Length: 416
Image (cartoon, rainbow, N blue to C red; front, side):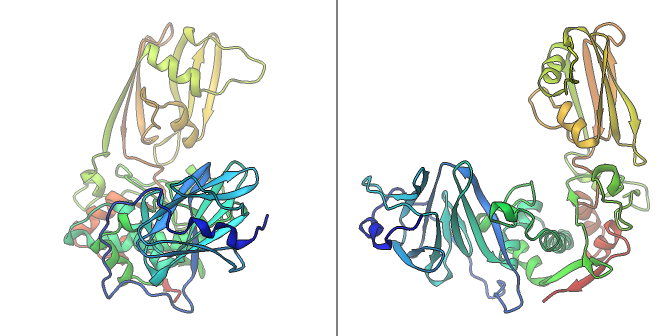
């Protein structure tokens, strides 16, 4: 719903909150947009009732066609809210703008823009969605990757730099492969682990920026197309076949195999998630299953009579992909690794770290009183093992060798 753009001008200069100071480095090797560099749209805020926006320099607010609406003064932040009539900006004095269906915010001099107190490169679009509003960060691909690599890999030493380069290539490949994945929502990728962790400027590190710059434009391909660049934290010493986890992901370059040194030590054994143990008392297990175990249609179950939890099938890589729960005379089968991790959550409600585990049940056959899962690794196990990449880098492998180990048969190609 378009309203007269000057209706909001009275808000110029109003202050609702001031973002904390953040030093933004501008090294000479930061990626610069080129005519061939892809722009990407990242969903920062989705379905929220409101968001705060501003910048360290003046931020111009326009309608999608470029019609001017207002300017947020440097260092100030306004709140935008989703209301029945549309998107409304509100200042500290309580004055509100007219309502708009969509807005674009452009900071002066390519300075950072602030979204909910965090700085991001590029510009922002604010859209109405089904339940509130969506804030989209629109920026060049290489600038996006600056906020991804270290968000995914953390701070790394100089001996581990090859792992960051490998992550930069994999994250760029993932982004290219999944452009327009969430087009119906108004953006390409989420800023969360639903796609890739993206923290904007606050997640950038000097070593992460260097890894992006040194691999600029390079992606992994198979038969000329970007690969399905799956990755995760820790494989536990053996990767998984793509089809074990993802429907339709039977790819020649996503194959299970040992991920160990010549001496037989897992490259990812340095991971804090390499070995893990979870325990449930009988009552805590029943509480978890009552919340997450599927209830077969037309059947009533009595989890007070929980008599067994057992593994009934494993994949070729040794991961559990079928679990059977016996309760009240009924057998409930849980298929698929993602479903198993969802159902057999920890007593605290977290997803089980992986499906590479064994179970020890106390009271099986009568009433389960205690359950222990001994496991290894974290994540689905398909593609790049991030801690394995760090281990390989420490062993002296370059990023090309690391990528070849986790995506055999692929090629490293430059797209711009």
